[in-house]
Image 1 (tube, rainbow, N blue to C red):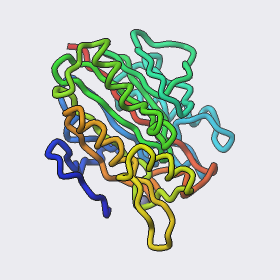
Image 2: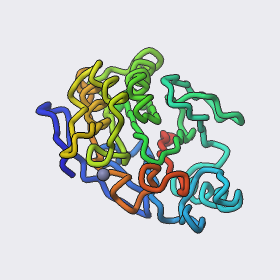
Image 3: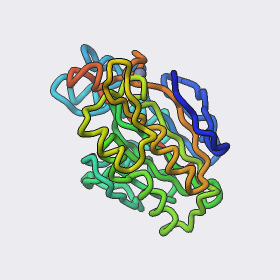
Image 4: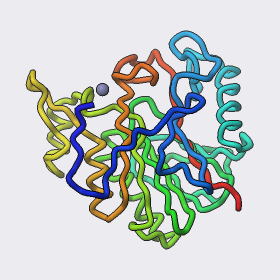
Length: 265
Ligand SMILES: [Zn+2]
């Protein structure tokens, strides 16, 4: 992958695994949790959305998306009306979920300590960040592209868990899921400059002199600063064809889902 890991012993590279077309982290494969990140496989959609598209869009039919969602709910072991989702806006708003809802609030992060509510975020290159408080059995899930990363959405999610659930960072595992990697995330100088203003680390230059952004490292370093255990999938959605990618496919593509829920005792 060409990914440079920090010399901090709280950051791990997890090879993870794909079971039933779902990417899962070893560190989150624990008895009180169900989680995963979907790939392109396992659904019924055709064309550019082939096959596991989880977002309503012009290039797919509502029936296909509903069937794909039904399959995902079966994999996660929940009723479809237990899925909490957001109107994602590339911001840093965190929502606490205490019951499922009909309307999706405008936000990019959710936290809960209630069993059997499934948190779900949608992705096609933007980072999914999973948080699990292994002591208090609380969880968080967010959608963090470059705008959300600059706005600190993943950090705000951790702080919200500390405030609401008494979460201690040393009890937390943070997992950064499949998303566009430093191998492919070429950005404009204007975007690179905003990251350099915060920290020069996540920006490198490609051989042809273009800025390359490493969002994995930006978020991993932030969490490591709190003493959180960090795990990076290291799976690039842009150059690995088993994933949908906005950078590779533009709007002619499906959308994947990150999901996580607490299992009732
Ligand atoms: Zn790549």
